[in-house]
Image 1 (cartoon, one colour):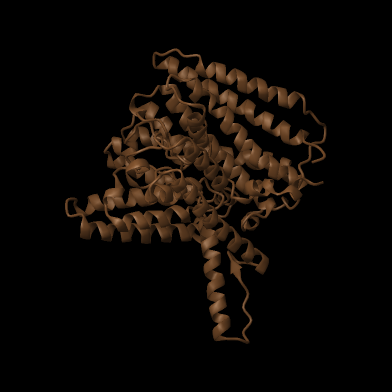
Image 2 (tube, rainbow, N blue to C red; image 1 turned 90 degrees about the horizontal axis):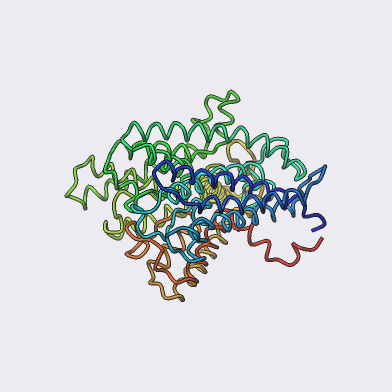
Length: 482
């Protein structure tokens, strides 16, 4: 790369922002009667490195080419995970470097997997820091998904390229503009979620902590039992509503603000999300009504709706141990993990739009068999789709499952049982959080996993969050040639 200054400058800015947010947990701990310099020390180190990077990489005309965009995308998330782990390592939780990095990576990628064994007794500053990491990760991936990932032509993400963002040189100014608008929407949703949780029965600390992880569809909670700790239907309804709002493409909010009042009813992705949620809830409800005679119809509806929305969106909140429901829920939830929510939202997974386009492609191919001389054009959201675009999506899905199986094999070779390895891999690459089984299931955590498994899962989280190719391309020697 000819000039790395733009990349280092941007990473420096991000570290300064991260360091400023580290001060928040310090004041939270003071408010609740504690005093710990962990976060002041962490903030000082992070801000110092950030300022150093900014001052040593000043340029008058900052431009970001395609190669630098890939590098910035990958290294910014990795650096934030590294520096975000400092408070965990310096805390009184006695976490190892690997455990601290795992917790931080899980937070910033909005995965929600945790190695902290007793959240109920964890310090308030650590609990709020986990929520802040997920909240920052949520806004980060939205901005990246709208402004940068489409330019990298990753797995069909170019479909969501913003107008006038057609060249890499326009990334920076466009990012600033979009970031301001998206941040306003994101902050507004977070505020309303805080108030809704508070009115539903949470105390103010839990309202703040859970609102940040709900909008980010991250799933970190302040209690080991997650949302199930509260046993409050009103809180669960608030969670469902705001998880869905976080799962909607934020471009739709932008278009709504600009005057397109019908966007939420006409966007194919949003309609696909609603249909999938409705069908999935009905299927799970039917299964529980037949097999779970202990609960009433409305109780079965309640746990079906909550857990389906939580798993499909990749949030990972739980209200009950669904691993005890039988084999069908395990297989079904594993499938939902892979699907994920909408592109341009805080959710991860393969994304609904890819399955929709793949479905259109399959139907078109069948039509060509029935009508050999017919002329058919592929369209999605009233836009024509090229064969190159289809191949990009097929390649992405194929690679997604290849990485899933490779990661599962690595975990198995590291001594994990079949269910733990399979669900842990799926949960990591889909950024869901809880897996299946006794070890990493809804009532478990990742603390007892071998060190190498934790590192492997951390890489899986980053791969899944950044749409695979943004990381994998860095391992090709040809990428680094000018």
